[in-house]
Image (cartoon, rainbow, N blue to C red):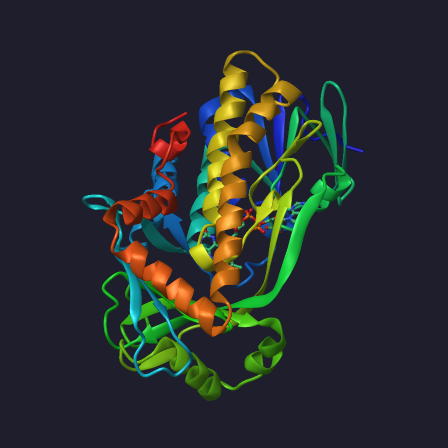
Length: 415
Ligand SMILES: Cc1cc2nc3c(=O)[nH]c(=O)nc-3n(C[C@H](O)[C@H](O)[C@H](O)COP(=O)(O)OP(=O)(O)OC[C@H]3O[C@@H](n4cnc5c(N)ncnc54)[C@H](O)[C@@H]3O)c2cc1C
């Protein structure tokens, strides 16, 4: 069996999604030749899987992408979110009362989020990793064995890597988390997020809209102009799981009619600009974010409802915290896989993740129903928030990820 990394001064990241690639880039840029950084994921060499998701990248995560030097590659197609409105209504309601409006600036001239297409972000990160000297491998991690001085990583093709630290960025169904014996507290929402790109006749003006419909939230998120009708938005339509197979079986005309009932007529004629994909939704959090010479990152550590567009943002906050922890330790000559170093990462991320998980879980439960007293109470609550500028500002800063004392990368500073 070949030992691929000769030196044990390596950090191996299993999973080349946005979280894994961002961490690899941050580490390689800061540590240079001192450490070899390897990302291994079958998806890196497989033909690209179509993923029509677009993410609301919060201001802090955007500052990090800028600090990593990849924002320039995606800026031209990123759409600033300049306003957000929330309405509580039923399908087909002629009038949809607006209960809450946010104008989306954290500071003057700084939108609280940008919409970025999944494909553009993955492509820019992969290219930047390659250019920075990250080793990209198209293999699945089959198993690993941690010891006092290092971790041995067995790949599906039979090769073996050795490293100081293994980062599990292998998504919500993380096999590495399971192998490490780290528990997962979670549940299924029995909902799916239906995602599609919708073209429309009139400009969205950077406005994001969230309609709270009885089966769950229906979000209309602004994308940069393009497509047949000139303007585009991404929809994230939360639907009860039992309704999803019949919806996905609809032909394009009937599907468009279903979307139109929820999308409304404000933006004029609409058209489907992508297939509709379905993503089962659940909640989960790992009992620990670290194990022996192992750190969990992104969805491998936590899974939340997309109601507030924060899942990936949480993962990017993990990236900033873990990169800072590893780089600071390495510069002090410490072993980046040592338990005391990893403990710093766990402490930095645990509370924030639990808080965001609780908020998104609560919001989904509160809004995914049609019980009259609950509707009245939530509408009163939304109306109240709308009249309190201080509270609105608090929510915007939390959503933008700029509250508190964020790690250096989230402040747009280099490591
Ligand atoms: C409908 C929907 C809308 C969303 N909208 C937003 C939004 O607006 N804003 C936001 O912040 N978040 C959003 N999210 C959440 C976001 O999509 C996820 O949080 C994010 O994609 C997770 O990234 P990740 O890199 O942690 O994991 P993943 O993207 O799941 O990547 C994991 C990678 O690991 C690889 N892998 C798996 N097993 C192995 C192994 N054994 N060895 C090697 N590699 C392996 C896989 O091939 C995969 O490439 C949304 C989610 C959904 C479902």
